[in-house]
Image 1: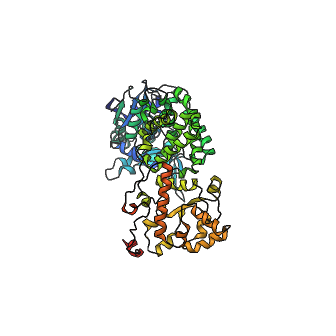
Image 2: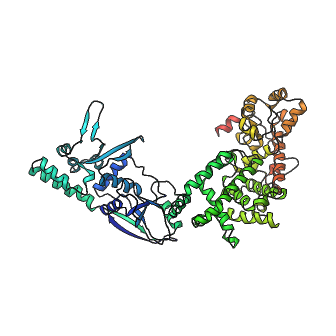
Image 3: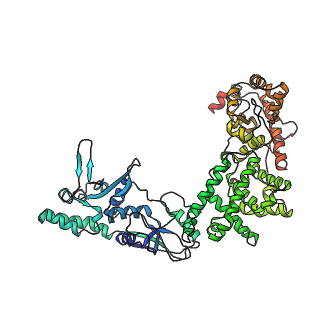
Amino acid sequence: MLGASFDSTKTSLEDLLQDVEDGDLQLPDFQRGWVWDDDRIRSLLASVSVSFPIGAIMTLQSGGDVNFQTRPIEGSGSDGSQEPSILLLDGQQRLTSLYQALMTAQPVATRDSRGKAIKRLYYVNMELALRDDVDRDEWIVSVPDDGKVRTLRDVSLDLSTKDREFELGYFPANQMFDTFEWRDGYANYWANDPEKTRFWNRFERRIVRAFARYQLPVIALGRETTKEAVCLVFEKVNTGGVTLTVFELLTASFAAEGYQLRDDWAERERRLESTYPVLGDLQSTEFLQVVTLLATLSKQPVSSVGCRRREILALSVDEYESFADRAEAGFEAAAKFLHGEHIFHSRDVPYRSQLVPLAAILAALGSDYESVKARDQIRRWYWNGVLGETYGGSTETIFARDLPEVTDWIRNDGPEPSTVSNALFQASRLRTLRRRNSAAYKGIHALLMREGCADFLTGQKMEQATYFEENVDIHHIFPQTWCRRQGIRDRDFNSIINKTPLTARTNRRLGGRAPSVYRRTILEEAKSESHASEIVQSHRIDDQILFADDFWGFYRDRARQLISLIETTTGKQVVVDDIEFANRDALVDEFDDGPIDWASEAAS
């Protein structure tokens, strides 16, 4: 494994728990809190009691180049002042559960099956533990912190005193590694009854010794292990199912140097998201990617530019502090750019991932972005990325390519960036853009608003205020119910070709009526017939074809107009790759077979 060396061994459970007690074994601060519930703790104790395997743990030897802020395992006797020699990377839930149940006199703060917080003490039912016909989970018992298990009417089990434990034969799990005092009390309670002594001896041989002899497999990473390897190892072995982010790893690393990365990011996140809704759900890792791109861009050669996990984890505190403000300014500039393109909300951003290079490019350009030419170039790069659907796959390599290429293009009249030169939009793609999870779908929605389309009834253009106040979204032009009555298939009328930005209120008023019918509603609200035509045409729709209820005529004409819009925006010719679009001036009609039987189509 790159950057990691390890040994595989076994260590006694008692020794590991004692290391936890002494503070010699602690957690790196990127580990989440302890979350196991009561049933899982009982099952874990039952497995140890019969020497069943419970999985390996993974540790990291401290003292190497990887320096993390650390914290004691929850409930341990350590106050955290001692420098640990070992960090626990995997096995936190198991080791914390075992420590709290077996090593402390305090009740374990856990949760029941419904997630309610409870406190529990754990016992072994001695009689059941020595029977072969009883399932192991039945002899591990948890009781409330006062020692009493209650039913609706009375107390079904009372272990509130030592004498009750002795009388009923319930051995406290937290005495498992130090049985002498409890054993003496048990013997005295039963007046050294030989039968009870034999009973205890059987219990000790079978159960107590099982705990004393239990060994856990340990994968021990050496101190020379790199941060990247720690991150990769954690993700591969973490049994909690929650992926470790580079932000959490870097937070623990920076904290060891006295820098609170989490606090710094929280304040930046609050400023950005409260001011710009389009930056909602901005991720800490995205911010680190921009910081890293800027930091690596400042170095030579240009090939060093990158923001993969390895480059992010190599960030120093000084580098973060040097570039974090510029990264924040880059995101602010990106938000303003998106607003100018009529992308106002985070859900409407075509590619979330494209925010990273956009913010990095704008941060790197600074005042060089202010010219009209530079803004046009950024706009062309952005929309070629969206409509060319560049950012749908692996992105870090594209980020590292776009930042130097776009900045060189703008500052030095360098060659056209790869994202622009390689972009390709095929005309037939319009037919398959049906859902808002597609970047190109959301992009065309924004472009129509940017081009000044006005709401069918209010006549208002889709500016920011209208967008939020009137709940603008993309809606069908020929309504779904009408299309189905005409035998038009979902795949055709759900295409972006038959959709446009409208307010929610307008969409409701138009209802499921034919365009020739809802035309009257538009005319009632418009100043004149010519104004109504102007409103409809602002959506790249021929109003005469629309109001003639000619779906296929509209479909072909709207496709042609959207192709023109895409070509104007990207500066590139759309590829006509389908027989339907073979004639750019008059699309070949593939619908001459007549209407489709909707019922048959739905059944198929």
